[in-house]
Image (tube, rainbow, N blue to C red; front, side):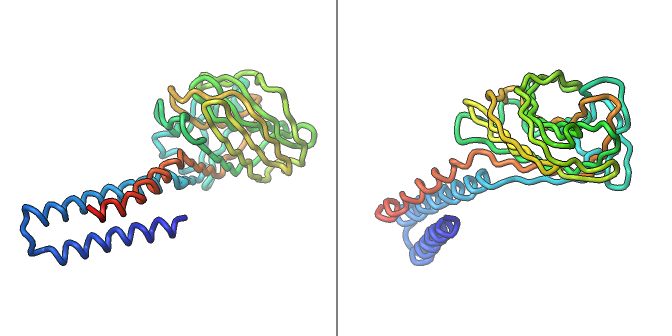
Length: 273
């Protein structure tokens, strides 16, 4: 599909250059106007094609734990982390469900959920630093938080997590406690925790994997009128972890490609003018 778009755009620009070259001596009142019409038409197509392709492509950002400290969109609502090489270490806190990291992804009202699904993927590399260890990662719309927890319980595994938060602390989950057992890495060892979210106006899909386990569930839609953020928190105040890196991939509304193809179908009509 991408090659087809490139071919059509090249054909458009080649036609434009040919007409400008062959008619450069024509009277401005007639031929110049036609060339300018074709120029603006092709320019509109190029804007739609490349603008649509940019909107459809994935945006991936990846940072080490230490790099998160310098990002203006990242805050640390409760515990102040210490830098350990490229990682951030969070020692024990004093309250349950403390939000350790808040990473604001979108401004209020953006993106829209009225079109195609918005997909967001989060991949965190974490180090376990305590025997009791329950790391939680969610998307948060200012009120509701959806995601999953990576647990040492049952030998290790993942559990769904649907709750509310004020951006500083979470609350007891209101989910149905969907669990998948695996084998959590030992104290001092690192592992990856991956989450994939598909957000629509009618609901949200969550896929989580880590510690050799995975689960998938559906829940009600998020309200992006207040924005959207990633929250990283621990279940209990005595739990400790290192955040080695976090990668976020965002794939907003790819339906703009349809507009690009529609615009390209109008090229033959423009050529006949």
